[in-house]
Amino acid sequence: MPELPEVQALTERLAEKLPGRRIAAVKIRRPRLVAPDKAQAVARRLRGAVVQAVSRRAKSIRIDLDRDRVLLAHMRMTGHLFVKSAAPARRESASERSISAILALDDGSALIFDDSRALGTLRLLSYREADAKLAELGIEPLSNQFTPSMLFALSRGRSSPLKLFLLDQRRIAGLGNIYAAEALWRARLDPRRPAGAMSRAEATRLHRAILQVLEEAIAAARAAYRRAGAAGDEADFQAAVYQRAGEKCTRCGCRIQRLRQGGRSTFFCPGCQR
DNA sequence: CTGCCCCTGTAA
DNA sequence: TTACAGGGGCAG
Image (cartoon, rainbow, N blue to C red; front, side, top):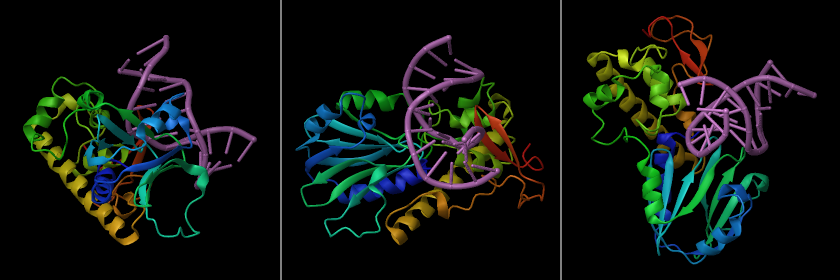
């Protein structure tokens, strides 16, 4: 499931291919992708648009077009966005069933939004609308504004558990279930502890852990793209706790546990996460 | 704040 | 055959 690192690698890839391309034809196969009842209008408004730039904000991909049009893509759980080259399609490509949209480009290639669970979104907005939407998100963990002091300050007065604090996109934007759990393991912090109870030293540890996890995962996602040219998911990232309930912690040997927080599973080591 | 919903492939 | 996975939006 694409979190910030996978979206970053994907954005870099799209930024190499899309700028300058004109959208020649649009097929929205799953109307809810863009908005209920708006698929026709969106398709019409997209035709002829020229890509200016591609960037990432949290887990969203922003595709700036000309004439005050912006595409905001969110992959959610299973979304994949990729450019299919003009070369004759190889038969092995995934079933058409899961393809949500096809944007044919002027060089014969196509931007494909594939999404087996169909939870992803692709919104067509004005620049102002896109800016407003993205402004609701919190700090970018890879920006230089994200410092140990900033993380400490953000956590003050928060009674919610650390794990949920890290998942709250209005404070820190881009961490999902996997890397939140991994960062807490690296920082040796119990996901159940109230965020506001972190000491300054612990916040510093957590800050470092978040950056390490994200940077490793970005490197893994880039490598996956270079190798396969397609997937780029978290497969290459070696998770220490995520989906490893019952296995032994590589740091202390205790059994990794799973629990539910905010309706989602959290994996952690009760031995060394305090 | 909590919890339901969206959606469908996969695991039990 | 059913339960479950989960990010984000929104109702309560």
